[in-house]
Length: 277
Image 1 (cartoon, rainbow, N blue to C red):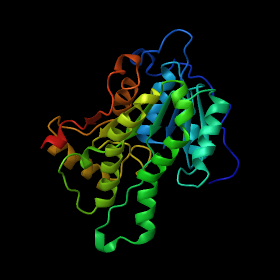
Image 2: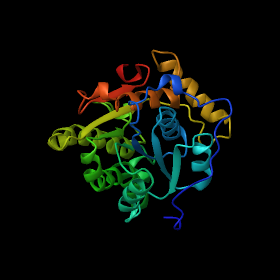
Image 3: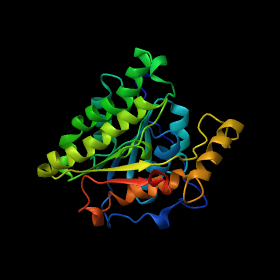
């Protein structure tokens, strides 16, 4: 974990207004929820943090790089950042302790941080296996456990971010470990929903399909190989395109609304129908 540098401060308000406010309903007058989003420096995590903040909530985003957390928080004074590696031994306690200090409460935990590495079984070494399994499966387990008390105090919600590629009886050649970890996370979503219901905690999941986040491919995601990959997925998807981070964020936010309280143990695929083909 990088240094004792938990909070990103000094963000300014967007002069043109807060993006997404009209599309994300508030939870009620005077009720400002505390939201924790891991992997919040890019992509789906960034869009989710902003969507919650646009709805009047206070958000702690967790990521490994201060610069990306600064970008997430820019223009959203309700977002603060914690520089941390979710796989570090002290990360669960640090994240929960910081959330309670900064937000005062934890109503929603979004387990979004993920690590992927395409390689066949024969090329998979122990370090890579441990990296993927720890980030994608063990880290959500340990963080959720650490957050149980504050979540129970607020009748809170855990949202586990899986992958539509790991649903059902599908296979995923050259990406089996990532898929296995995400399938395991879906199983935990169902199991925790039953196990934690007596404590008033709901557990739900969102399983995104391929989402154009442009990560690692320049500011506009312009890498030709990446664009070709997205075009190939779009051609196979019934909806005719890949997803956008804001679309995934919309579902994550909706599942935490009071109106969604009867949804428990549900994993919602958001992939344009690709997992049905």
